[in-house]
Length: 439
Image (cartoon, rainbow, N blue to C red):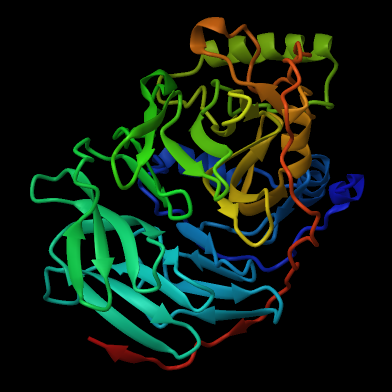
């Protein structure tokens, strides 16, 4: 049984990485946003305290310039790929080493096919027009390259075979579609012929043969305006037949757990002010209400260019057995992925906790106890039942969730044997070996 000792997790304590976030799918910062972020104070002790409260481990220094564009854990749970604007890297959590990838920076999300094989999408070579997919063998230090006629490849996902990967790219009409690349034959074909909807987000689970796709949406435009989650929708279907399995509102991305019971959903939460943010325990309810009134009055006097409210990225979990959907309200994040090495562990890019925007980081957390409690009809700490828009009250995102009526107890809870927590590295940088490229 996993006990409360998991709350005493230690931060990874890695290194300060100087970078900025280039992922236009999720971030397109204005000048004023960059000023807010650059001059926002970072309190390492506060982040460690809140992380322990919500059973979160962080992969990098809490107050470093952690501007990753992408990250991905290998299936063994030891190799962590992370991308910065200048270069991409692989960290080995057991050997405490970091290697720099001998490639130009990828242009989208990558996919691990095994603990040795990683596929990366690259921009065209100099004076060329075709984008590339590169199968990189980190052990043999070799590369196999496929040139593709589509543009802006992204959303790479394992297809279930060591020489194949699904990805999305823009077709000749500028619409994002799903494709399959085969590194043995060097062929690229349209995937899932039944999938004719334009794609905004895409994931695939080979174990369940489930495809997820979200409608195209600009989460944040060039002026910093965020999308309305009421416009979000995501669907899940069988890959072989296109049979629709699920359709969700208030979600723009979905990630299916390999055992099929749980589905993670990404959305945007209720608006909060970027000013004078407080954690749940910092103020009494009366003081919080008083401070909120003062903040609202101050914001009303500010010019239009001031960003007055932001919607934090939020993560929900849908339980296929109980048909209940839960939202994590104790922490915020996006780019969710299930951590395959340990059942019911999850990883994501941390945005903040308890109504406060904090320094970005790659987060890792054990969801087992929270899912077990939810399956028994109990609402765990930092968790709330998701409600449709027309049933939501006036609770602000930054407030602690009110007590909720517990649902009926379902038949079963998630089953998993407790396992050791993932290793916590502290890594000096090392150079990657030279590579041989196969074309």
